Image (cartoon, rainbow, N blue to C red; front, side, top):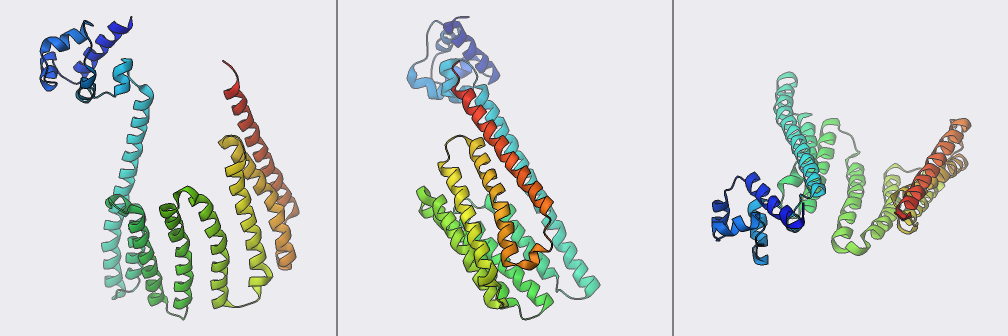
Length: 324
């Protein structure tokens, strides 16, 4: 079938799929019925200015109009996206139904069985926190991330306070301080992505590196002991070095996703004995529970996995570069 016949047949097919007669399509396009008939009989082509309106009425894209065939890949992507949206919507409805059922049940049980409302406040704060992470982002249209993150932060603090109110003790200030420092990390990530989009990833890695030491310092301020400088800081420093090494692999190692993943896994294999050795040196009591053969097995398995990923990545690169 030649190009002209393909175009006419395609327009006719899409018109029928849209449930329109030639006259109805012509009326919607402010044309005569004979104009549509000529298109379908390959006697003429539509004016270029009519293309957007024709595509809208026939539910096709401009690419499909000019190629006179369905864009199967695009439709497959749209179907996959629709399925993903449907699954996400179903999960959110399921979560919401669980919240609606759990709240009155816990309220009644706490009041009828225990004759008070004490642990119910923990349940309420926990459900509110979960709602902020599962349902709220899809209910907010503007500033979705900041609104959901702010609400989740407030609910987390309320949950901590509710736990303290139920359990008692003198740990509330320590818990609030540690929680506040923990929340500083996602907030700093959000600020980096919002204001420094071009350098956001590098900035997030740098913020995470400093945040680890800050969190350890705050925990040590409330717990005391000699573990901060003796073990925590050196181990954290090694962890930060590993973080930056992974970032460097993902950013600068040439090759596709398989090669980058292989480089990261090999780094993890090399980091395993480094962490084990540093822990054994800084914390001799850790060495008593060490299992040498298991450490060697983990190292060899991780290294083998990294090499396999590298091989797959290089094979994929050779296949793409091979002339047809």
